[in-house]
Image 1 (tube, rainbow, N blue to C red):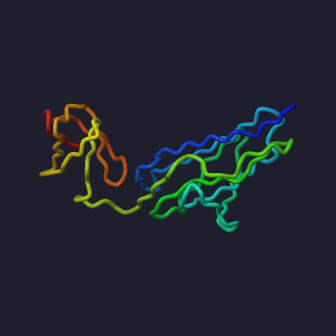
Image 2 (image 1 turned 135 degrees about the horizontal axis):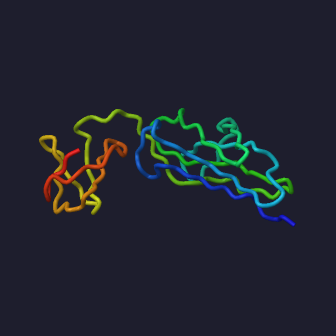
Image 3 (image 1 turned 60 degrees about the vertical axis):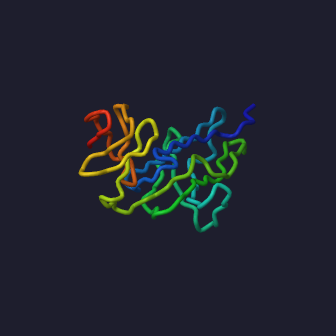
Length: 166
């Protein structure tokens, strides 16, 4: 007899990292090993904290595909921090998941970057400075560092031991 609730797996491509909404993807997979899902409908909402419970009017209705997957619509998210709240999902025997937040903190930053906002973090997690169109890092001998203009933009190559360029 099936007495376990379906499982929910959430994949967010940017967690705890500022991202433009156009680069953000949030995928949900609902798996049921038993009698099957009661419905392929899913209700979700974007909330401000992990402990928030959304109002009824905040819920968005979606439909899982035949494999229990859905890519959530993030196009309406404005600058700010969000958590994904998924309403309870049940199987045909009324085993249900908890209605709660899943994934992690999503930080949406749709503001166009200005040249002065550029900063670099090396793979050693050391801050670098941008000067005369070059990035300078103390002791940055790693081959790949992140260039961030409010989001992940590119990797950079080593010019010499302390100088990096895009």
